[in-house]
Length: 357
Image (cartoon, rainbow, N blue to C red):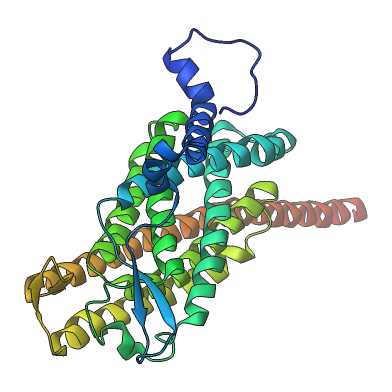
């Protein structure tokens, strides 16, 4: 995991050495980048990795008030890389100092151990992202007025919090790809995790590049809330299998959020952007409001929601079948007990009759 010394040290640069010390390597690299700020020669290069780039200042109504907005560009790749290193370090800290300690107390099996670690990491991330995203939405007006999702498109200018939020989101999910190797994920779990990680990267990056940050943000926050409830419920379930009420809340909210996602997506791509005054395609202006892009985006969202609902239905059916299987043996036991009691009663009656003779 890194950050904690192990008993035996494997050969340097061996695969096992990389697995055990990847977080240490990431921390050394991050510290090296930060130390570059101390020197004037390297500071102008290192600053690209740490701070958000493409700052644009605008004056409001010919007054002295200045508002800072941000655009996106190629330099964001360096910033994403740095915060991906931070995500790797935080991942190792949470794993070593929180999840591993809980795992030792619970004595889980290998399968449950892997799922517990996955849910533990994601629960921390979803909680942080939900609180952060909700605070941004609270400061914005498009939560009250949905027309702002497409009005004055393209929304190429972002506030600092919005841009930094997207950079951190992309950085986290890119780090999650590397953790599939670093955490020695079981082979049977890799396709499932790889699938949803790639979907997150594709959707969040797409919203960021296509200047659909408002729509992406308003869809991410409720989705993260639902995922937070699911993984928190799974953590409680691993500690005590009788604690399953959280899954009921998750199931209800899951369906509601899927409907909300489809509704807002259809409104934005099908009606809102189609009626915008400046339709067209211009990479320089960040305008991607053409029919092909709108159909592609709407199709991607609808297919993703359909896939999620399909997996959700299969999950519920599996739980229902397991519940029925547990109930059948109980019925058999009660039936056999009833039969035995009837036989005993009959035997008792015949014994009384024979004894009377």
